Image (tube, rainbow, N blue to C red; front, side, top):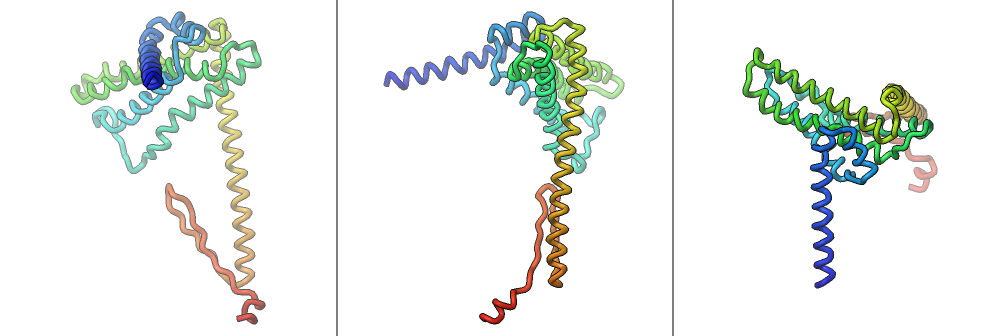
Amino acid sequence: MEAGMLASLKKKETYTHYLETLRYALYVITHPLDGFWDLTHEKRGSIAAANTIVLLTVLARIMKLQYTSFVFMQVYWEEINIFLYIASVLFPLALFCVGNWGLTTLFDGKGRLYQIYMGTAYALTPYPLIQIPMILFSNLVTEEEGAFYTFACTFSIVWAAILIICAMMEIHEYSLSKTLLFMVASGFAMLIMVFILLLFFSMISQGVAYFVSIVKEIINAHNEHINVISTPGVGSEFIFSLPKSHQEDEED
């Protein structure tokens, strides 16, 4: 009985702390310098709240595709891969965090990887906060009245970018000029990591192609055939046959 009450109380405290750290995002975006300092150094933030903000950012991107008025956005769903669209948010976020952490670690940066992720995630708050109401607004105005819609959407992105700079400045305890320098350097680091990943997958693709060519030569040497069935989004299926050995024929 007492153990159950303690577990319930602990669960309630955890939930309350989660709500407080999530609500703290509103303070961070209006008081970025003090907010980001307290976020990491005073433990005012949490990874759970950061994950929630990233999830809301992804949902805002998807909802923008689905519900924005065709006057402002024309979507051809047959040309859109929703998983790639989600990755267009998560992949650059991961690359930036890893690239920024790798560089700043070498130059007296104070931030840890989880702090960089948390600060970046909190800095994204203006995007879902503005973009989601603008989705509804886009269905209430005409194209001639859409200047405010365009301004608000652009402002949410610029605001988030400024907050990311403030976050990195407070987390690493850098000056503004040094922060801007490492933001640019982080961009180059992201490009290098993308190049390495593309090179890695290219080598794997060439290795698979080489293996398939060897198998194909073996099958052709036995006067047999190989069929390949490829399904977009699923994968490829290889179907081939080989003749029975002479020893097996004699035993039969």
